[in-house]
Amino acid sequence: MAILFSDLNFRLLICLLMPFIMILTETHSCKAQIISTAPPQTVTVAINGRTTIAKIGDNFLCATLDWWPPEKCDYGTCSWGRASALNLDLSNPLLQNAVRGLTPLMLRLGGSLQDKLIYGIGNLQRPCVPQKPTSDLFGFSEGCLNMSRWDALNRFFQLTGVQVAFGLNALYGREKDYTHAWDSTNAYDFIQYTIKKKYQIQAWELGNELSGSGVGASVPVSQYVSDVKKLRAVIDQLYAGWTTKPLIVAPDGFFDENWYLQLLQGTGNQIINVLSRHIYSLGAGVDTDLVDKILNPSYLSQEAGPYRSMQQMLQTNGPWAQAWIGEAGGAYNSGHHLVTDAFVFSFWYADQLGMAARFNNTAFCRQSLIGGNYGLLDHATFNPNPDYYSALIWKTLMGKNVLSASVNGNNYLRAYAHCSKGDSQSISVLLINLSNTTQFSVNLAITATAPLDTLVRQFEVPMLEQKTSGTSKSGAQRLEYHLTRT
Image (cartoon, rainbow, N blue to C red; front, side):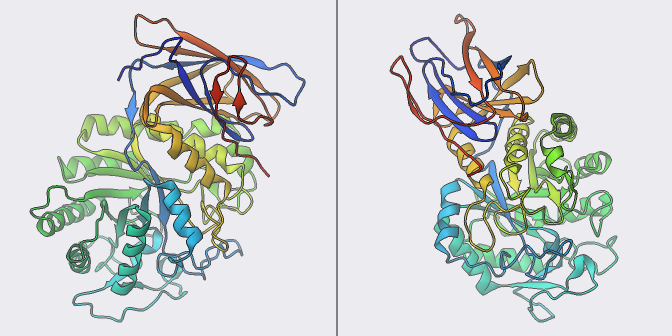
């Protein structure tokens, strides 16, 4: 897609993430006032506005609803409360308004306990009861989603306007021998009920973190290939006659290149619609070095490897399938209070959103919407955590078409660019300053469609925010969004 610019109609939307996020709309150069007296370092951000390098989906912005009960604790801290899809207060107006604010939003219902969740429908041979702490897999007994709760959840989905991806129990019928075939009967009855009630499901996922060596449990890839083919047969049968069928998403695990490749080769064309993986690249939530990792550009860039590998794998072996980040909480075991639910985590989150889009992932599901120490919302108060506002600004400004953006001069400044949402004549640029000692004077070099020359606009990226919206000397209006610590 070509983007046309001229000196008269050029309009630039800039997202600046330093210790804050700011969006500028400006027709000419703009400078933010600086608190530090140190001279800024000059860098060039080159943006190719001639062609797109990737395209994200309508529901790129995604968040998860998990199944953990209040008894879920990590490192002596119990951070889930009543944030499970089974017990969340769906009538809370703060929750409803927060979710509406992020639409178009996709909610992914899933997590470790989805593979211990049965559905209270059909020929179920055991009682539909909640999870209880045990010594079993993941520390809890089998749980159950009754249909009255499923009805309530779907009323919430309809009220807030979200799309839904639902993770199915892929261990049903296997007991403790995960080499056996998946028993699809309970899932069949559940999907049939969902269709009968006319509930709209964007995607059905099979299992959670069962790929490769798995987390707690794993399924051999040859068996998983048979299982996902069985799910395809169920979907094709139950949705027969539908113009558009829900997507099938797999395997929703950690990226094991050989396992994923065998999955694609074994399933072939049009069995899997979405190849998905999870990201917890910062390590355990108990890690005392999380902040250092978040602000380390070399550490953040390591994740580009798996992104690139999966993109190339799909191009070569599965061009019919999309790529999703099915779950990304940064630090596993519920995150870390005052880190993954605090301002500093916006550096990681914004960088991951930009990187996922750059490598042609059509959805990025943040763990979690609510619950744990990495929720977009506080599980006790339902108030937004800082990353909620990062998501809100992304949703407001970043369009589907992704442009090439590169930084020349310092790896502590990271840049991502998209065509602006709802305006093909403008560009949204996300700049992330990971340094707390350096401010940058940025030359934006934007290559437009020939015969226009490269357009250069200069502004400064400070370490500390001290600027509000206003009018430039030229009389041009600009709009700035700030996310600060206070």
